[in-house]
Length: 326
Image (cartoon, rainbow, N blue to C red; front, top):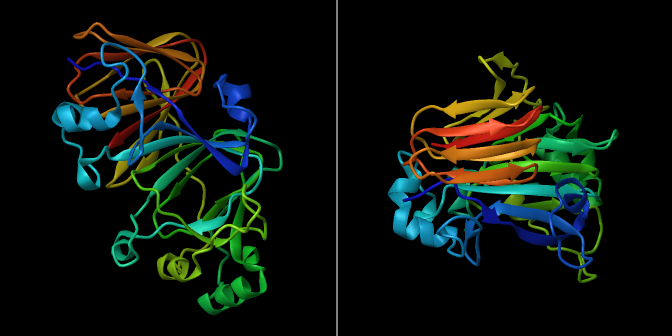
């Protein structure tokens, strides 16, 4: 019998990373290298998340999908090769990420990559933090290509100041970069294809310039995507919590949910869900299995579609994301 499942994070060192995940979420980061990503729920080749709780502890998400895909997914569609449909991360950007793009579905196969639509939720931000998303109004492709050549292509990007609690939706094909001073919860298609347009003229951890993918980027970028905006949805009031829709897309839906005091929220229906705790504490329980997962900020929980009677019991002033793949 399945139950609310938590996983051990997979840490990725990145030239632009830091140690904020240790400070904010008490994650036990390795050694002293800059950690840029914590893969919280992953079913990637060589990077399958290991189950941390309950009777299945020690098995991984790849095993779960191979043996219990129907119970896990319900009506949700798997990714390529029967993999789990989403990849969930926390990013710590102490420096700017590369200016990059992910291939749209119409181009991915031709470019030998995977499409990647994603969303970002700003969990922590310095006062000067910003995102680079889409193109400035009226920037033509010819100007973009010219500025790649002379090293000034960042001038073409639409820069958006951001603060904690903001969210951005990034369909594949939308050119983008994360600025410095940000911790971001990322929910995305199960893909790891990224084409770098520009990397701020820096070198990687090995002391060499990181590879650029200019031809693939130019084939993938939506050159009609000007001045995109942050998610602008308003909060609605349920009996004991507030919520707002962050993403409603054919690939996945994401809601932000907030409580101002200790509350119990019942998750109606049987759907595959992921709970990502941004702030506070929560206990995710399933009445049928009798198993609970205790979450603190920075932890994720997979709720298989087969579960009935799932509740989320929060502490005072708790914020979490609820993602549902379609």
